[in-house]
Length: 190
Image (cartoon, rainbow, N blue to C red; front, side, top):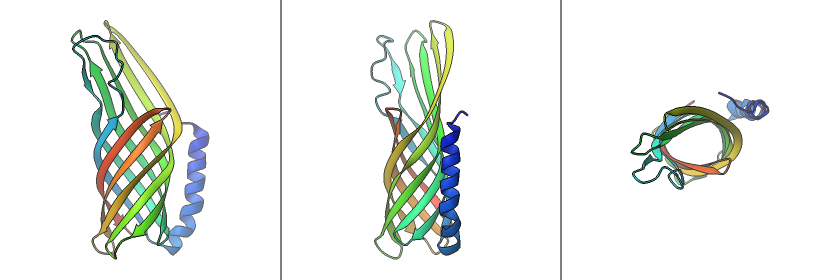
């Protein structure tokens, strides 16, 4: 995958400098989640003609690690696969795009009770997109990458000291194209 290496170095440096004291002083977590991703406006404007079969939703997955810096603020680093969007017409012409990447986010939190917490997310996502097209029998591949902001919100339900369920909504702005990920998952806390 092609990422802007300076963004990766920056994310690793920031993550390391923020996680080091957080891991010593507060609770940390790692986890996985999955759900539905949707590439907004992907199906608009295709010049294939009538009979287009377009699918702008797919399964998205994430793996993440985070730490609470205070009871009201955390940080998180993650890898996300935002799935695939594809379109095909009756003549067999097709195009598909896949996106994944790594990111870093700040998490302001609002404890509602001892077992339930709301959180916001704002951060940076270093992404890699791979596209493949087959038009009139001619195949072409292209790739693009970038680093763009994202934001979201979610909720956690704590089931004891070492386990939590979470649900979240996130919006990724990928160089002007927006992808929404709604997911649910689990955290293992330590």
